[in-house]
Length: 111
Image (tube, rainbow, N blue to C red; front, side, top):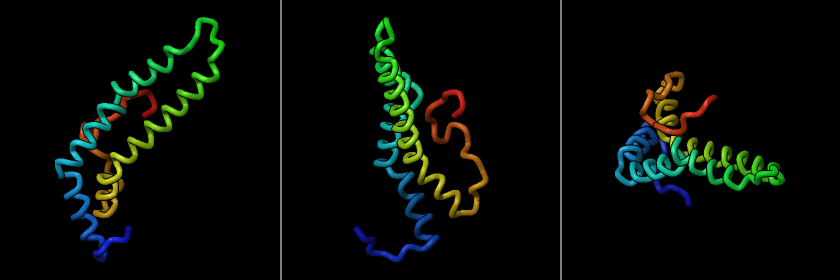
């Protein structure tokens, strides 16, 4: 669906600031963090690992599911982070890291 307005750098920044400040976005981000943040990720991975049989006969399937879980969680994390990261880029602050706790998400080794 095409936008009815001409998008400029300034209007995009304003729109994104309004987006991340909106109650709807806050609810969406909170839901994503609940479902896919550190605790949600652990719950999903425990469920997958719980299907691992004693004889490890389905180890390949469990491994594939864990890879898929990581891919999904990473994409959701990227989606939730995008507006803030885009604002930083447009404002010329792309090199500045997101402050700790500003976008709490998964806290696993290597992340």
